[in-house]
Amino acid sequence: MELISVVLWSLHCALPPSHNQHLNLQEIFIWRRVCKLRAMPQYCSESLTPTSKASPPTFASLFRNQFVEKMSVEAVKEKLWKKCGTSVNSMRLELYDDCKNKLCDLSDDSRPLGFYSPLDGFRIHIIDLDPSSVTSGGWLEDTSLVEKYSISEDEYNKRSGTFRKFKEQMASQNPSAFRNKMSDDYMEDLCANIKVGDRCEVDPGEKRGVVKYVGRAEALGPGFWIGIQYDEPLGKHDGMVKGTRYFQSPPLCGAMVRPDKVKVGDYPERDPFEEDEI
View (tube, rainbow, N blue to C red):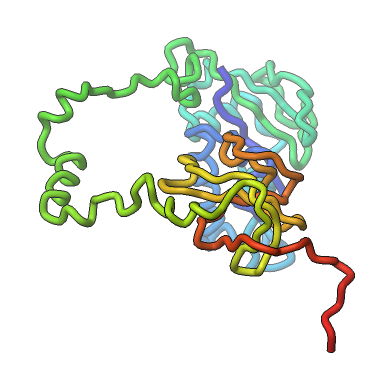
């Protein structure tokens, strides 16, 4: 089971860029430990950052201070054990370059780390071989393996102090605050004189187009909506809203607006080259 990756980065960022989306719990623990160490004044010595005492040490200098080339692989495992919790006898170490290519296994515990020629930016990857480890089978990464707590509706209704009980109490005290302010017939009366195919102008902006849809749109909210195909690409879609197609129009020419924003009548398409008189 893959447990953790220790990266020798020469960057002043909090996490290595290629690992931002794939850190498990123990990886996060290591990086937090590293960040804490970077904040300690004793690690801002001249030996770690020769150019400036005020600048923080890089990940590379910090880890290089711990993992010197003369250290044996077994000694490296001893240091990693204190960070990740995997016992020395249950570790298998792999060395990856800065392009994520596996170079070799650090299989001989007696050899020095320098024998494998690690460079700045290379990654030491730990494989946990212990079958009884909490990492076995992906328990630290795969949330589907975690048993979820569930409760029936009847049992939940019997409980006190739940959000549902609180909401019911607030609704009884102030019914108007929890009443749906918009009915399913909201603005239906304004649609009486609006028909599909009518030329129209939409406020704000006096955008002109043609009516393509009149009716309800549950995906947008209760009440009635007007689907518009603008003469110019001033819309947001092509007539499909949240997976439901209400009409068809060219890309970015479609819009769904409330009836009170639409005026129908003699609104011909504007000539884009027409200039206003001075």
